[in-house]
Image (cartoon, rainbow, N blue to C red; front, side):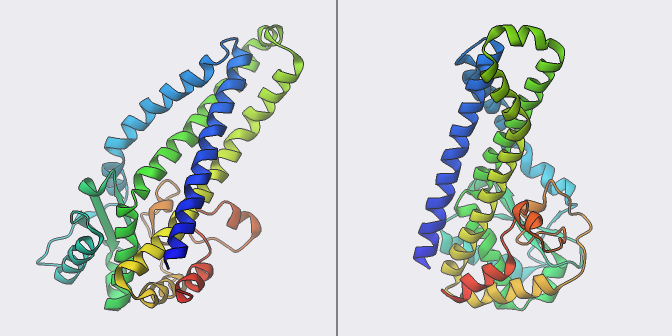
Length: 291
């Protein structure tokens, strides 16, 4: 269990490091084409900071509104409230706020910028279809996301992906509107590299984001098993969630990566696996049962 946690932390931060280098390199190449040199990297950095600031303070409220979630009271959901409180104490974090989505599809997610401003949201279907050990496993997984600052981590990565898309789009528009002036600024090789990067960079950035998202899911599984000391609870819950065919009506592509399993059902294929926000459920169950 400890090996799995250490491995996922190491690989997640390694991917994040390469993501930062990727952004810096992209800004530098585009800066050469625009005739501003290294200032391209500086401008990209400050634009990313501004975008991150807005996402930092408003993302949780937006997600809860999109998901049509409502606050859960202790009187209505006493066991849910007590379990979340116990897991928060075990994890050493403040008790998250609890929200509920009225939907028969079993699923859950966590949101919030840090443990002091965190929310765990579950569907009514999750509480009805899982037993207590399975529900505790799912809640431990979401508590681990909060403890590990996964939400803030992935929010920053999402901003970086948006920054890459913004730079690439601006670069392509520059070639369309001022192609002659751009060609006068530098040699042909730099221009060709810039065009290729403008086309391929958003795809590469998205793939890196999805890879990071999958790593964080593995880490939350391992941390959740550590909190409950019972990996089988989460493994069994994932089996039930995989087998359940009820669609989550409020799910969309913007929030799908937050849920414990992808609420947008996908057919198995190489491309779907490559562009999936979640690792294969079968592999997650296998790892949990090997702990």
